[in-house]
Length: 160
Image (cartoon, rainbow, N blue to C red; front, side, top):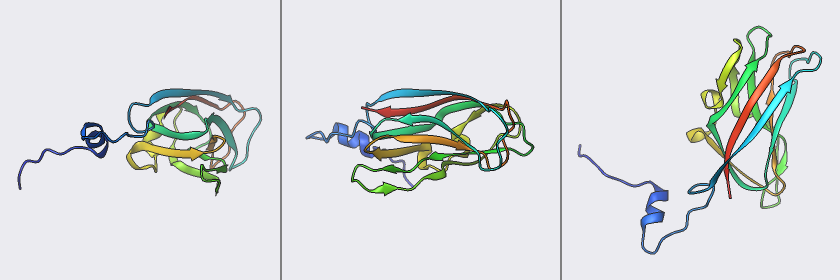
């Protein structure tokens, strides 16, 4: 086996002649943050959810490994799913809601700081949305949520 020196697709595009323009959500885009605070008002049965934020329309890359939350869901063996509500993609096609399309079964049994990259189902810890009107990001509890439970954090994403 030999030592190799290779380039990523994006770096190859940026350094080729002529230069191939990378999409801004992949290369030199602006990182934005959507901060959320939620204090559960009343008890919620299994499957209860919280709309955390709305991402803007267009091509938006969510950075799950850079997105975090303080989670204090006090039900025993608590887990958190992170996904999206139904939306329309840039081609005009309906995209179904997916309650765990970003994170599936993140263990939040112990109150504390959680990184969404730890339970992500997304390749490379990122997910690309392409929408006409934006996308609502939603956290869902497969178990019950107790009144007063907290979910406070942020989703980081690249746009422009």
